[in-house]
Length: 234
Figure 1 (tube, one colour):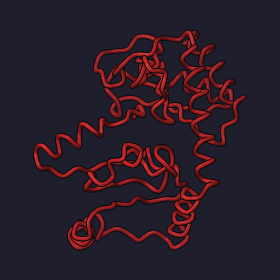
Figure 2 (figure 1 turned 60 degrees about the vertical axis):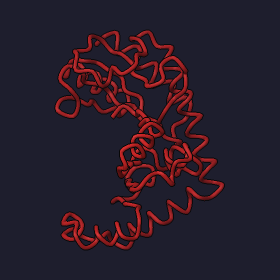
Figure 3 (figure 1 turned 90 degrees about the vertical axis):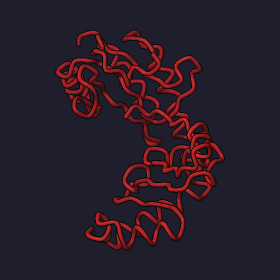
Figure 4 (figure 1 turned 180 degrees about the vertical axis):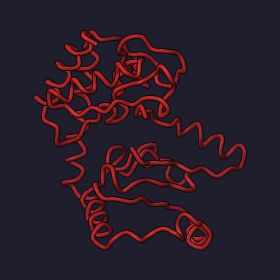
């Protein structure tokens, strides 16, 4: 929810220690993280240590549906035993073709250039949000059950100034205050959804800002200025 990265290297160590299987959900990583957007495992060079990799076709790839990668035996077992798969409807050919085209684009030089543009936008958002006087960057606030008073920005790597994903959570605390702030931003042309209980713990409602490669620098700057101004009102 907050764009945190899993401590994959440590999880791999635990997997080996206890002879377990490791399933990695790359839903928010594919298309964003790793060479050609291949995900966190690829970036950490741990792909061979992940037994099951799953993800979505409906975020960075812009299509619909999802996927599971694993051994031949695992895939055959899922095809024949997973009721949620057996009784689901196959994706329309157009959606499958769109997903395939998106994967081809990610694998191309143009796709990699688009991904690098995204990270420039992410870094800009990080720098601008960090300079806002609306709270403080804290470690792990997004996972706390304690009530949050006032807008606060959460980052997994708060002291390193290194963005971890395209997601930026602005912690507000009160559910109604988060809804009001989201509504105020919408009136100014910014769609920033309010995330609240039961999706997150009570008292830790937040706005969830997501950056894309198509966002222009002036749009990102305008959003941050609006967040600063409206947060003081909220």
